[in-house]
Amino acid sequence: MFKYFPAFLAFVLVIETFVYSYSDPGLCTGACWAHDPTVIQRASDGKYFKFNTGTGIEFATSNSLAGTWTLQGFVLPNGSSIDNAGSQDPWAPDVHLVGDEYFLYYAVSTFGSQVSAIGLATSSTMAPGTWIDKGGVGIASKKGQAYNAIDPNLVAVGTDYYLNFGSFWGDIYQTKLNSAATKAGGSAAYNIEYDSAGTRPCEGSYVFFYNDYYYLLWSHGICCGYDKTLPAAGAEYRIMMCRSKAATGEFVDKSGMACTSGGGSILLESHGTTYGPGGQGVFTDSSKGLVLYYHYANQTVGLGDGEYLFGWNVLKWTTDGWPEV
Ligand SMILES: *[C@@H]1O[C@H](CO)[C@@H](O)[C@H](O)[C@H]1NC(C)=O
Ligand SMILES: *[C@@H]1O[C@H](CO)[C@@H](O)[C@H](O)[C@H]1NC(C)=O
Image (cartoon, rainbow, N blue to C red; front, side):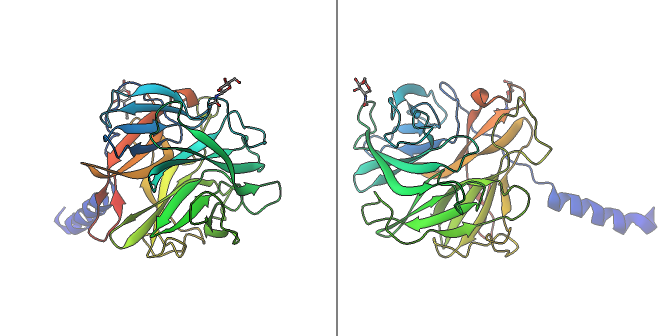
C-alpha cells in the first residue's frame, strides 16, 4: 500500500482539479418559459424585462430576477416588416439602452435556412404597445453566402457600435454599424469565431466587457427538438467563451487557441438536471453585478422547446480573469 500511496494521491489531486461543479440556475417563478432570452433592467425604475424568441417576441417583467415574472405581450404583435419567410416569428432578441432609447435587434429566418435578415425595434420605455418596428438594419444573407444573418448582438465600444451575428455556415461574424446603431455602416463583415469541425454549430454570440477584456460567448451544438431526437452526449447546446483586449477580433480561449481556428473554453454545459444551456447573454444587474442568463431544459420536467426555462447565475471570476458559473 505504502509503495502505491503517492500514485493514489496524485490520482486524487487530478480528480480534484478536473471535477468542477456548476451552480444550479437561480430561482425563477411566474412566466419562466425562455428561448434565446435577452434581459435588461429599465433605467428609470430598475424593473427587469425579459424577451424571448418567436411569435412576435413575447416579453415579461418582474421586480426581481427570480420573479414573479408577468407576461406583458409582444414587441411585434403583427410580426416584422422584413419581407422574408419567418417574418411572423422573429427570433433571438437582443436588447440594449442606446442613448435614451431601448433598441431591440431581432432576426427573421426559418429553421435551417440561410435566407435571413436582422431587424430593429425601438421604444423609449419598453412598455407594451410602445415598440416601433424599424425593419431591416441592412444585414441579411441568402443561400451560398459565407454567413447566416441571425442571432444579432450589439457591442458598444465608446461611441462606436458593432453587431455580431451568425449561426452555422461560417459561424460568428461582426460588422460595424453607423453612429446611431440603426444600420450597417457599409464595411464588409468579418469572421470572429469559426470552428471547422462537424456541422460548425456555433451561434447566438454575445460580447461583454469586464476589467481589461471583451468576452465573446456563443452557443455550441443542437438547440432544439430534444424531446424528438436526443442528441449524442455533448452534442446538445453548451455555452462557450473566448476573450480579447479588442471587441473586434483576436479572441482566444483559456489555452490561447484562436477562436477563428476552433478555439473555445466551456463556460456552462449540461449538469445535474440542467440540460442544453444556451441562447445566453450577460447584463449588469444594479445590485448583483454581471449576471449570465440563458435558457435550459430541466431533465425532470421535460425536454421540449415549449418547456425550456429561464436560467441565470451571478458570474464568478478565476484569479486569471475567466468567468465561472
Ligand atoms: C396590428 O394589426 C392590427 C390589425 O391590422 C392593427 O389594428 C394594430 O394597430 C397593429 N399593431 C401594431 C403594433 O402595429
Ligand atoms: C428540475 O425540476 C425539479 C422538479 O421540479 C426540481 O426539483 C429541480 O430543482 C429542477 N432543476 C433545475 C435545474 O431547474
